[in-house]
Image 1 (spheres, rainbow, N blue to C red):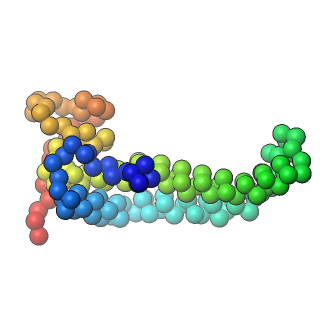
Image 2: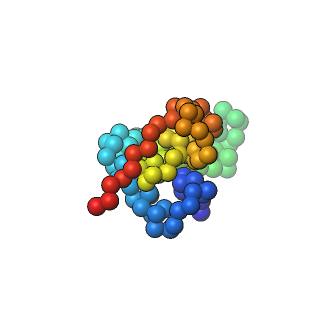
Image 3: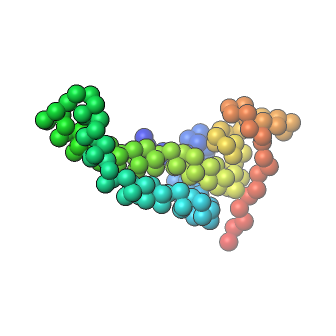
Length: 150
């Protein structure tokens, strides 16, 4: 199931199951604070609802342009809304998850005291304090802020 919903917490980190759950809980809290995340996710069903009524017409047009008739035309007209659904929710959701949720997980991991890159999640253990950039992605290294208990 990790291909559908990746964990984004570095597997090399020495975390217990409870610590991983706490990091994910904190990441979701960070995600909900940013209203842009909610707005972007709501655009997926909005875009789908605005375009699904034209999808079968576009599918029919594509079938006509490639010279298909009869069964090919019917398949393209029936399959176009399904293809639009996959593009909107599966592909769009995966892209938004990777670029909007993953940074929240990295920030939550940093708040729990682990020195990971805030851009790619790479564990920065063993690096000198003089190292200013992540060796994986090259982004600037940020100081760690730990979460207060309570």
